[in-house]
Length: 207
Image (cartoon, rainbow, N blue to C red; front, side, top):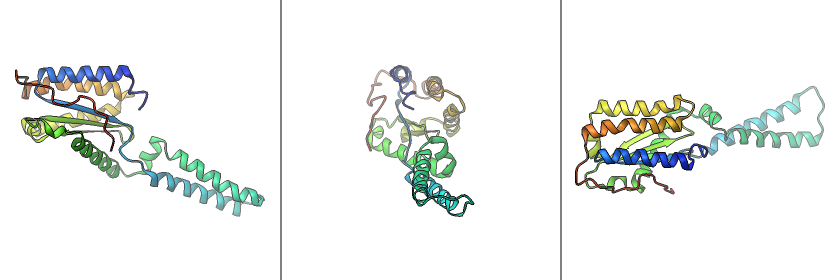
């Protein structure tokens, strides 16, 4: 994720958002994060299973192991299992999809509130939250914007944004998908003389 958020990417992201807001009334905020939760229980579970497996092996294996090996191998195995469980694919394999999606939604709604996306005068703010570990993009529109577009349009947008993770460079696909929304938002909420930028386009929020 750090490689994806280069200065070049941030510049292109800012330019893409500016283009959307120039041709529509919508206030777009994009937040990209490495993960939506820590999943410490996954790391502990992998560590405990690794330690127990190595201990059972040295106890029941036909080979002879010294007391030092019996003591050290489970500790080493625990450390290895704990470290491996920090790898994104391992976490996704170990956690139910429903839990991953729930964590993304919780984080997105918290960022929406703390970032003040709901404070635009016309209630037309849109948070686009991208979580790399969970491979999920969560679109959270304010009530005015949600009502301005048909539900079928929102469903299509959510589907298309989620498809960015089907590509090897999801960060590039995220920019491309953002650019495609310009025509859609311009169609339903074209820019007016009273349009103004009320929110930062890219937020860094600590929770």
